[in-house]
Length: 311
Image 1: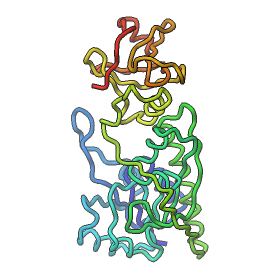
Image 2 (image 1 turned 180 degrees about the vertical axis):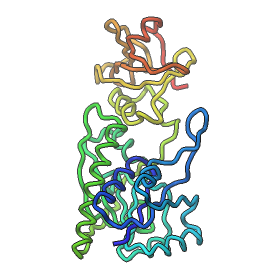
Image 3 (image 1 turned 60 degrees about the vertical axis):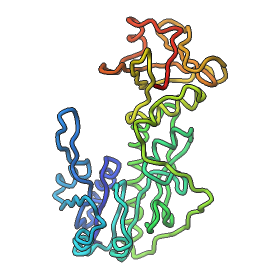
Image 4 (image 1 turned 30 degrees about the horizontal axis):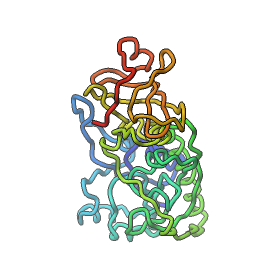
């Protein structure tokens, strides 16, 4: 079976690694163009490209995969199956029609919940206890195709997007292996239509999503801090200076008070009143500084009584 793989981040690289381990014929790997990273803007290949090069696989990086030239190039590869995982581009109907087995996407949510670009982060931000991966037969919509296989993954109390990412990548690799085994036996993939009435969306994240609204409940704020770690990270302002919060926990889910007020708290602790409840800030970062424990920050900063603001 001739396979074209499309993906970009580490989540997708984990799945590509499994396909290669199973010794399927990978005739091409499509990924996003290299991007500048860091303060020196060094042009850096995405994780999928790095792995493909290690494996000696041909790599294609069209800026727009829907152009006629890109479609013809893909058609020339004669894939039986196109596997997609967090590629970052929408496939045209012309591409969907190329492989005999169609295009199968490994999506990091339990569809139809959390369709879209950031399912991992929004599942945590919304306080979900369980998420997972869904293998989907792609159609012209965005994450709307028939579901093939699912695997649930629990979300731990202290889970961040970074740690959940790894668990979902492993689940995605397992589901991919099951799909390839079914096709290799000459069997048809199971298909279940999605219920549109159950659909929710996970829009692409922006830096603005990390701005803390202190009128939210303590639980909501703690969940968003976990969800947006490592990116875009949650932040607030202290005396006009940007303050990123890397880790926080729930102290009191019910206490009422002035949102954003820094409360008197036990030694080496940093408690903040929210719209409903109190959180303990455990790790934070002043603009231009490194992330540090709240206890270290409090050694040189008196903040009790201050008001943290959204801007």
